[in-house]
Length: 266
Image (cartoon, rainbow, N blue to C red):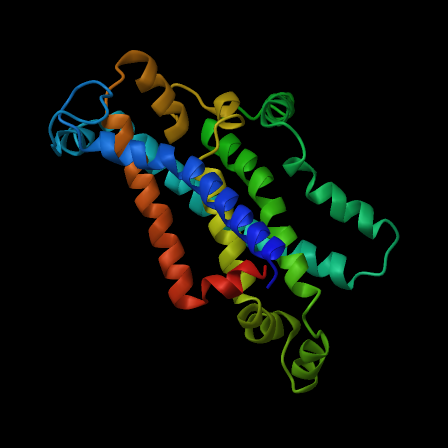
């Protein structure tokens, strides 16, 4: 390795480490503040305490928001996995005109600003007389999670040998059973990756949810904003730390089941 190559490698690693530290710093600050005994956001904390985690358990509005967000995230992810797989198979195997246009249209919600999409969904749902906040939130979150699933599954299908499905059908399997027995296991890394990103995208969504909630159905990001405006304290940092731990657990489970290196391929 020449001197220029060594210098280039050092610069690249230095920049990469600096970017990683810059992106991780807010997470580290949130975790530290969540264990502070101070009622304000002091850094470094004057003393350590678990009081904010104890207070968190006594906030029913926050716990209700967590419950609602998890429910919406789980259901919308499950629906998106089913619909996304079917759409990806249709686009990958179909030979109909406009196939590429449909594929682009399906991922278009990822290209639009969240506020624009939220206003459009609000007008659309109200135009059809749908005023149920829970159902509206579910539809809105399916709209934003479906493209994530379809894009990952479609990329995985480009590497899948569809003759395996034909072989399974030749051996007597019905088409739905062949998909469950042959296609789904081979695409498990893609499902795990897309499901993980869809769940986290749903539970963390703010710009769309703020147009679809009501007084009785508030997702966690909306409730956190309300709490931050009314009584800001490190309880918010405690919730953030719990979400960080949840994300790390998801990644550890994914690593044990599939492996992060294989997940990165999708």
